[in-house]
Figure 1: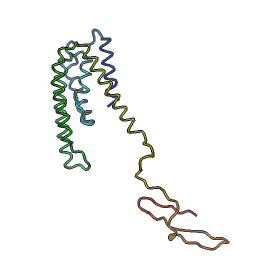
Figure 2 (figure 1 turned 180 degrees about the vertical axis):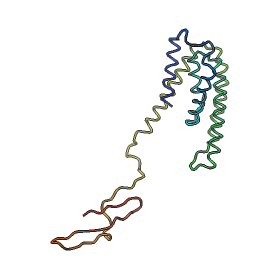
Figure 3 (figure 1 turned 90 degrees about the horizontal axis):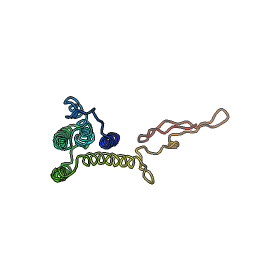
Figure 4 (figure 1 turned 60 degrees about the vertical axis):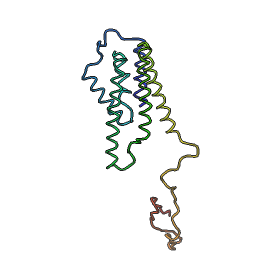
Length: 206
């Protein structure tokens, strides 16, 4: 997600500070382009659990559409894609191994917070200039990308002491009962068998 949100947020900030003249149509992208963007946004939202409006909003605003027009459309997109994604995961949980069922309690709490925040934001939007709204949207997308990147790097950093691995330690000394000593040829040598112990195959040494 960081690889998607960071360039989109940075691009929106640059386009706001240095708008391109004569390239964007008054009504923004064409309907086929918006549909294609919505398909991509829905796929990303279904994989990562975010609303499609999180990606569509900055892109549409950067392409010339006003925030007053993009915000209601992005909220409707987020609602539809989030509902469809949650229902899809709920159905897949009935026949797919693993714990992929939605956390309905957590989802309802987040939805309640989003409902309150959306109501407050809709009342604040007319009081803010368009340029400030665009810059704020770009800054939020960039900051969110930074948070995603920090979280990913934190998850990849090994913890002190190291986490236990799934593989048991290798042992090169098989049980003594599996080995026999033989005399002959002017010396003594040992022979043995390959004995699987758990998931480890212990190899004989001669």
